[in-house]
Length: 165
Image 1 (cartoon, rainbow, N blue to C red):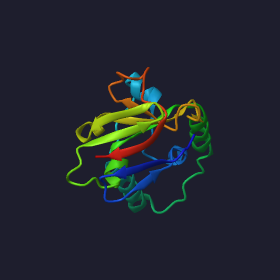
Image 2 (image 1 turned 120 degrees about the vertical axis):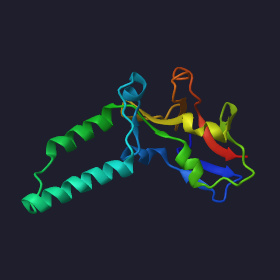
Image 3 (image 1 turned 180 degrees about the horizontal axis):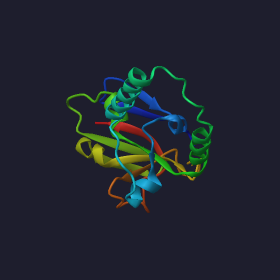
Image 4 (image 1 turned 60 degrees about the vertical axis):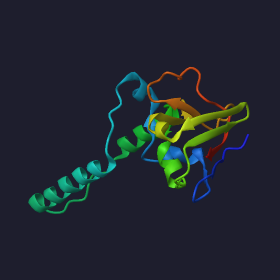
């Protein structure tokens, strides 16, 4: 099984996706939290602005100080990465390939057949790339899940490519 997924077809740029590195991506979503209703969407730009503003304000009031080491937080993140189930939104990857104006759908090629997804529905899809800290080597490299959880027990598996048409 190939762990690299090409995005091809009616796109300006043919790109390849490597799900094995997404564990380090800040956009990853803990799927256990997401489907249990505990997940809270965070706007990356807004979060960055808040943290930067707070840091700037603190430096103006208190002066510059070196932060304490965050060993416990690093240990928690490492443990979480090795035990949690993660996914990432599908839409940014397809948009990064820049579909042509004539494109209307994404065909998911799998070893078991093809699945067609209209481009408008990309907002509703997640790519599951890890289960309990392990990559999806047996039936992966990704599973396609709907955000509403309707196909959580029967996701699209054995993905080999995304073809934009």
